[in-house]
Image 1 (cartoon, helix red, strand yellow):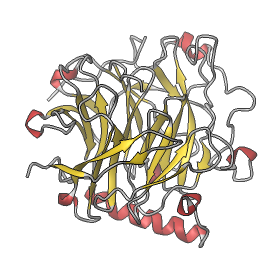
Image 2 (cartoon, rainbow, N blue to C red):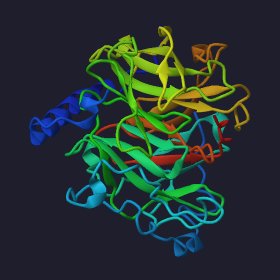
Image 3 (cartoon, rainbow, N blue to C red):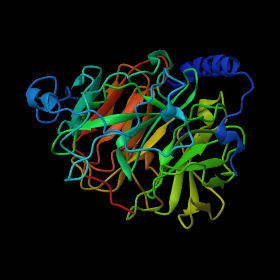
Length: 385
């Protein structure tokens, strides 16, 4: 077997400790989901010749509009913390869409904790830092951006209370992400407490959140008050580490790609393909999963257009153990392990990854015991639909 690495395994014990502490603090209250039916140094950031955003960008920052989410992870009594409300696009919009007048910046700097692979020096990386209002000692287990709410980053955290949080993204006039909002992240929804796997939005902006206890997916529309339903069980090994919807036009379209294995045994983690149908308010599983390459690691998945620099065919980044590795996809949409190239290495344990639906940028995070969110610009946006 060809393994991507076992670096995340050394942190899984911390995940279980964190979850145990969080569950004890929460008592026996049930979450809503439980009841649902060799390289070069990285270049400076976008539009900048230094190590941080241009001064004029910071001067134009605006806060979220009245009525948007202003709840804090530290303020459980705030009305906006009520999970019965929709996932609002908490970033500011303009007549041009959602670019050019972002909310206040948390200082962003050129990456110092990550290095690009030799084939990918055309890309630019920014360290966005810690998510305001979240305890950085827990790290961030998953990231996601809904196509219909592109100025909101959803973060899965195991702090107290554990669950899904949202924070506004700051963009420049070219729509590039240049920072996180200066406002604390707001609590959105009780997340599944049985694991530390990824989250992902479908093309129709339905969030898929794996239940680590039964292998099902809870489906939560970004603008809905309640889960749209439950899909599954997936039919894969219970511990889901990563999942991502295959973009339109890619090999393996209309499938959900999942990295799953047995908890506590990283060498058991494989790549799986789950056939799906987007009909209805959420999605439907339409067949049995098929097992793909043996990855041998907890990993997240991000797809990459063939038109992006350094790529010539549809590809995927697999994020794990302090690195993001680029793989070409075969005719089934599965990674060809022989094509592996190092896209990026980091001096922390990399965690959940996602794609910006507006620019194609790649966002990833630290996985436990860290406080980083990073964005890599230079990708061509993925096809819609």
